[in-house]
Length: 436
Image 1 (cartoon, rainbow, N blue to C red):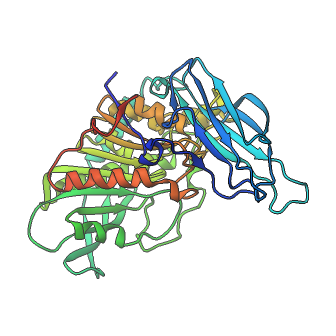
Image 2: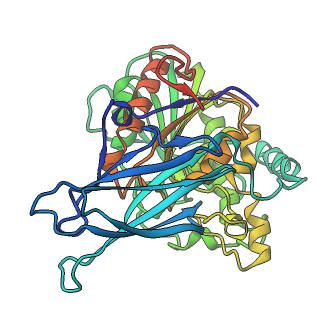
Image 3: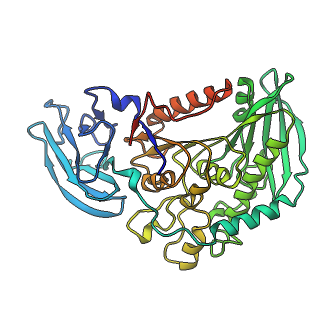
């Protein structure tokens, strides 16, 4: 297996730093959690856990808590109660196999307390670099996708660009429509107005049906990128409707009819188009996205070898069959009760695309994320033969739920983009990371 490096968020690395949770119920907001390892990552067989501290002040009336520990947010392996009358207590467990720990700590206030008690969540990783796929990769996975790529290659791109007013000076903005297999790529493209050749940044979108924002690409073009924001759907980027909001379940009983088939092919086509433009620098094509945008980025990098770097934040779409194998699956929430859906899902699972990715990958992982569960993301990046760097965000839920916990991803992705924009090459940062 290729050597990997793990970037530890700066706010977890500071000596003596404790995790102080936000404000659930009154009195619980001062409860702090100090992980046994500041990184939140442990080896198999090593004791993992947290020390809980509650200041002895009148403003902290809640002193009794219960907790449950789950592996991969699925099987409960431990539960108990905590009495913090003395001011501190510990939650701990030991696992001998790779897994993510998902912990719920619930304060017990008076039944009449307002607001009602809600769980506080904690996460930890046990030997995450050794996580393996829940089920084998389909034997004909590559043959299936190679056939679709061949068919896609036989269709001319036929780009149609419409100049669009840009809010920033010195930037050219266009709406774009390209022919793809069975659908069209649509989105916004922006570039610096000056003559020259530019590194390319292709941005894929998170889940939903919504209009794209021109600033997503014009801000990047202002920096010097040839930027392309690709709509997840075959609709004009100005449209906020026109596709079912449950698109992710369309055609989900067959790999030939799944909604994700044409989506992934559009993503691959967008890369081909960028590579055909005379204003591309011929060197760098970065794909980037969050949640379903990260899912598309990983699939696109696997399907199109022109990609030179991948930057993803809490990518969804991994471990699609996890519910059947002791791992709580996330978006796009494939129906685990339907065997045909489970079979179809494997052809769109990022875990199964991972071995095709040759570009270096930066992947941020939220340890308490239930939309893009961390066990699946770790499993996917563990299958990538090229160099990878994990941004471990031990106290982060999904990006839209805890945006204040995204600092490590925001800073590192900005750093990597800056390196590439200035003509450098993204490599896992060995000075500011540690081996997993």
